[in-house]
Image (cartoon, rainbow, N blue to C red; front, side):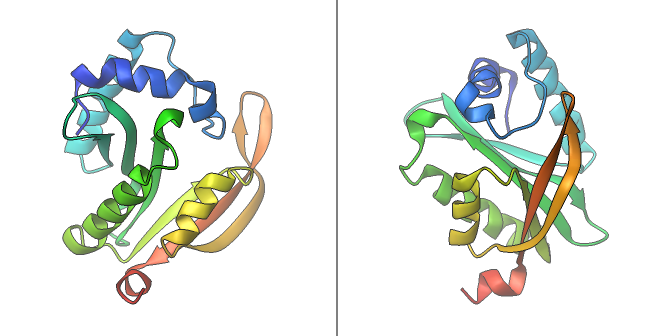
Length: 167
């Protein structure tokens, strides 16, 4: 779980142009906003609405990425997965390792039936890692998302528990 001590690392992630290039969410103005976001996230976790983890090395307390389940639906045994990583830690296998662990957790411990990912169609790296982990394209929605005065497209990928187990 991400805690207030992670606020500066999360602020970096949420304000970095490369990290946020395909993440259509408002950027925090300062670290204090991130501390509030962490507090709000903790409340959502308590209510069972989401789960979010920081990604770090055992040798350091500094977080260089996040991964989690959002839009969780226990009634339908599914959730949406989302993630981000500092550019300095890309192409090193960290996200692949985290993604595998979180998928395992979702299917084995949370008893999910499916996991979805909603990506910006221009985000080639996200598409590639999803496909590498067995996700299949389910849909392409044209201009279904509005952010900062622009209608954007979404590409939806999905993974079933049976597909993950039979890989």
